[in-house]
Each structure stands twice: as structure tokens, then as C-alpha cells.
Image 1 (cartoon, rainbow, N blue to C red):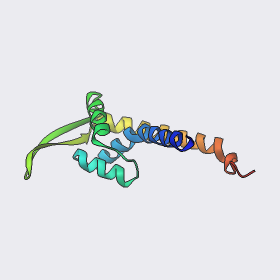
Image 2: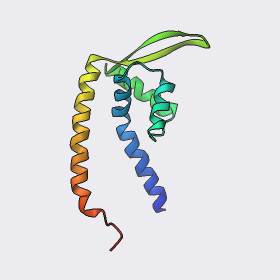
Image 3: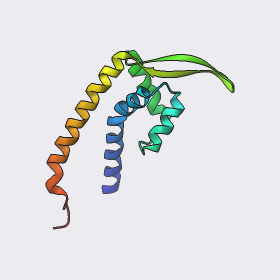
Image 4: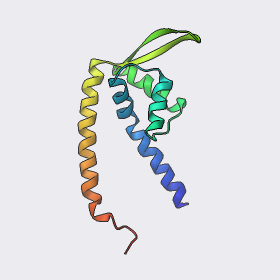
Length: 118
């Protein structure tokens, strides 16, 4: 039971940073969704298409991302996503918020490094 709860918490934490990581990836240059998924998996933020596509749509609807259709040599045209100027400003604010959160969490758990060892 404990392991199941831990895995659920891990999944929720990963989802919580998915927006930040996706915007960060796209701040480096445009990308096709499968490329984004590959980068996230490489960072051990395991993501499936069913998780990423709704996020991309939400970010697009918020004008943080946009996309461009490109012809593909191996099939139908593909959507390549890129970050907008509004998205870059939002990403900068997210990074600042993330850094503050990391500091706060590290500060609150620094005395708990010995959990279960006493």
C-alpha cells in the first residue's frame, strides 16, 4: 500500500512540473510532440501522448505556444510547436516560482534527512 501511494505522489509531482519543462524545452527551439516526449522521458519525466497533447492544447489556447504545420517526408503534415513571446515571459516567471519553491522545500526538509533512522 505504501509503495502504491508513493508512486501516485511521484506521478502527481511529475505532472506538476510538466508545464515548466515543456515550455523550457520549447524555449530552446520548435519541436514536434514526439520529440518533446522523448526529451521528457530522457529526464525521467515519463509522459505519454495522452498527457502531452492536452497540455500543448491548453498552452496554445493560453497563447503561450503556437504551432506551424510542416510537410513530412514520411506521411501527413506535422505540427511543430514553438514558444511565443508571452510564453517566454510566463516561463521566466515559472522558473522564478520554481526556484523559490525548491528553496522553501529544501529549507523545510533539511532537518528530515534522517527520516526513519532514529
